[in-house]
Amino acid sequence: MTIFSKIVAGEIPAYKVAETVEFLAFLDISPLAEGHVLVIPKKEVDYIFDLDDETYMGLQIFAKIVANGLKKAISCKRIGVAVIGLEVPHAHIHLIPMNKVSDLDFSRPKLQFTPEELEATAKKIREFL
Image (tube, rainbow, N blue to C red; front, side, top):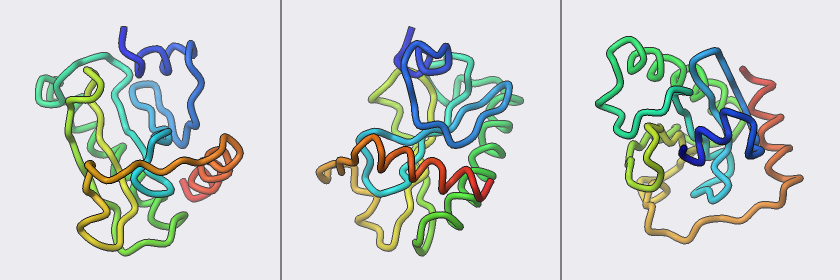
């Protein structure tokens, strides 16, 4: 069971920003930027391109909805999208508020926020969804 499946099961807490029966969006706790969100299918599948077509398309539409709310909540030029797929063996999409291309550089040091700051950010995003 992946760490993401444990979040879905409620075994590990997360700063949730959106949830449906099939999908979940929550803050990355080691973000590249304030508001860095991970969007996952609740069904555990390692590789995003191994998702069945219906789940894949649903995940993309859910990510778009979250990205639109995120853009309103966090001041930025764009919401960057990345699928790396090596960190956790559970398909996921990174949504990252960005102002320049280097904001999506995953080799940069990750930011640290307090639990209170993360909860405030999650709440701010939820208000725009």
